[in-house]
Length: 344
Image (cartoon, rainbow, N blue to C red; front, side, top):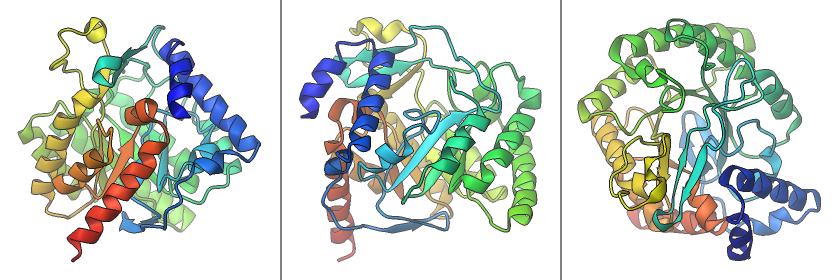
């Protein structure tokens, strides 16, 4: 069924297809039909960040930036969802066209630029959306906020989403907001994490609960920088690391017409790079905090390889566009079989 839907959706410009697919899913949910897409599998719970995830397969941020489709997406059988990236103030993002398919490579390039309706609108939707899986909220700074004041944007967004998030992700790794990745540098990262952990302490007391914080990093960091980032996350009591965001590298895409487009590359070409980052982080962290592996998962074997590299949970995005909801079931089955064999 999805093969037919994809053939029709791929006739549309990628960003238009993205919106159309979500609206179709919402329509199916309204008719009570979307739960038929959920895999008929037993729960495969896993503990991470002090939370219980019904299964290890999550939806990565970026697909549902404004938390407008939480309930329909939950119908698909994910163990957790991550919405956003959301910024304190609404912003339009970068000019269109800003999303490109590389079908021969099962990949996308996007330069969306944190287009979203702002944290106030997202919170209103999250409050109204019943859910039965953990919900992560991914936050970023506005494009016109300089890095010297980035901490204020992140702290403001953290305070707004804190009562409603199962965990909060700090996105400092998108290549599509100017200078954002500079926040991964040593001094900038330490300063930002110190400010956010202080704000988290205040919010924990105010709301009488401690919400985990994850940090999403770039695949384009060197191994030395990955180890430095891992040490900083431990020093500041961060609860998880998400590896990775999209890449600005274009390895192996010389023949692709769209390869010259500016933006972050996701999908199959990102798999090896993001998995190597997971492996480097795992060696440095030695199990001290969980890694969420994301990037290039197109089949169940890919999901298992992320776990073998050191991930605890995985997330899907581009693979879902190319494979559809069947990818969720395939990954769940592959990971359940891997975890079962590993426990023997």
